Length: 419
Image (cartoon, rainbow, N blue to C red; front, side, top):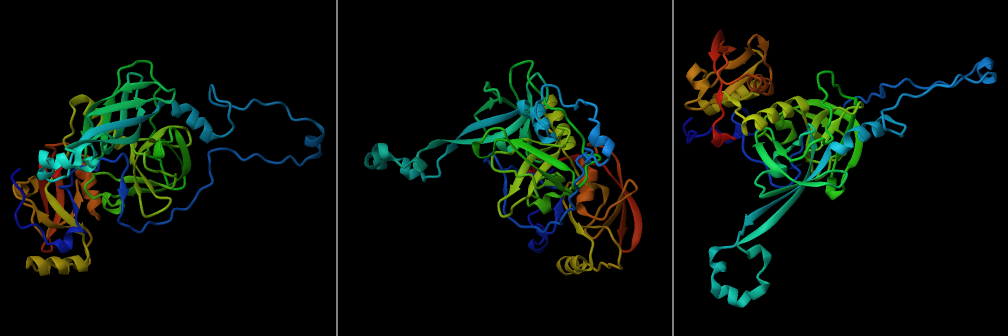
């Protein structure tokens, strides 16, 4: 794909646009702060732990005659008394600490590296003025199998010169970064060992707000810290979370996630991994986010296989259809679009030399459905494209100036300059 147009879509719409051209790298720090506040809905809290509540005996017969002895069923090798401790006992050994180190070029002007200046500074040259310095970050990860394949966040290891992996039992290994995908903030690391403890992967298919959530990681350098809470919400978009350059629909939890938790597992009450903790909001309490395990595992498999991930790409920017947005697009683009109360996703930009342009999509088109599935939000369109394969044929049902029509679009690979 060629360079982007020199006249991008007006700035007034940028913050509202959910772009399929998202990409770009994340910060180096081993956690992700999000500064822009967004409103969040309150999820009802369910007290259903999957356990039957113990009743108080009330009959005289029960009081006089001792109840028969029963043996409680607990996980093998576990001596605790609750499901959180059981989950941690099962998964904890497979949660690792990741210490990454990279060299960073100095921000000092070239002139300060002149020997003339160094004669005056000598050995007391301020560290920030040195030509290179080492930057360290700490994050978390978890072992996928006994052969040492580890899943973590891209921003934990991106740009690292060295990676050290520490297990809960104290063993340390040199880690090799096999692949990084900044679009989803997923990375994979390999350590050379066998018979390692590993996690059990779960599913988000039947996940719902109010269910239990358990997070394990190394926040603030405090290894193997456990926090618990509930699933607060599902399907939070990258825009809602405040990191619009990612292609993920996040799990929201109130289990405490702090700096250093990035890359650690989010568990259900059975001790199965349902997500990978990836972001916290610096301006709020009780808001944490995790990448669904299905997304993280799909990306990890591609990274272990080829070292990279190709994301399907259309090349459009879009907003939710509304009278206000139609008026704004008409004003900015000189169009005469009508709203007429219809729902859908309004295209506000089509990139040059993109699959969308080649298929004939235009600014002002309203996407009503993809392959027969109704579309009402940009995130739904993005998810439909992301779940397709490059070269697949997607049938878009659109409305153009009030006329319904269908267009076939074949997603292409996302250009490197948009990642």
